[in-house]
Image (cartoon, rainbow, N blue to C red):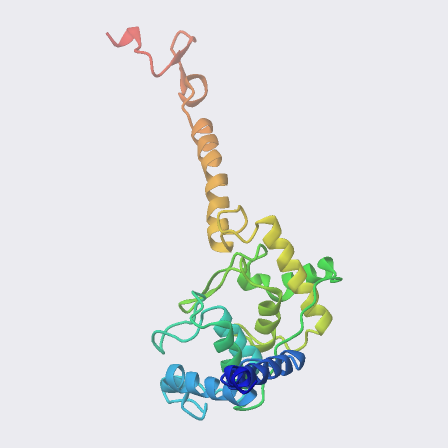
Length: 276
């Protein structure tokens, strides 16, 4: 009997460890715990900010002269917008931020957004819902406030000063709302627009994307300068053709006639027999 018991004694520590591990995993799953605690997420955001952002914005987020602005009033919306559209980090501080490849994972973006949000007061990420939005009202608001730069099709165009209003071909409803709230780049902040206005504009832009009008190759999507030039060329070609046709010489109309001494009418273009 003692010999039989000794055979199983070495399995007791293994069974105990397995039980503890099972209880721990069950507890974490039941509480919906994330593999990263709030503290570790904060640490990740601070670490990423120090490595990727502080050279221009400073460790405290108050900006660095001639390199980057303060982030005191940017908020989570601005940080989320520039990170998810690949506008940050910039390759150089003196160039316009343009959309590009996203450089961070979802976990890193969330951590950075939370860290920037903790540096000051600024707009939070809007909850944009286009499910029951009014596309007609969104189109009216868009044409009044946005079409001057992004053109009516949403394809974007140059706006002067080496700046360009970007195409909205890939803008998500949340990104549209964030841009309206924070005014990235040369874009102004549209603080007068309500939540319903933002939902409606986002729905209208989504509709433009589905129709394909935001593609620069789509007629009406090249911008006012290019479209105006094309219109002038299309009108100028037939105008030149008509002008040349009207101005073509006509012998009976364009050559003067003269009366001979005998009273007959002769054309000056023909030689007079009496001259010989």
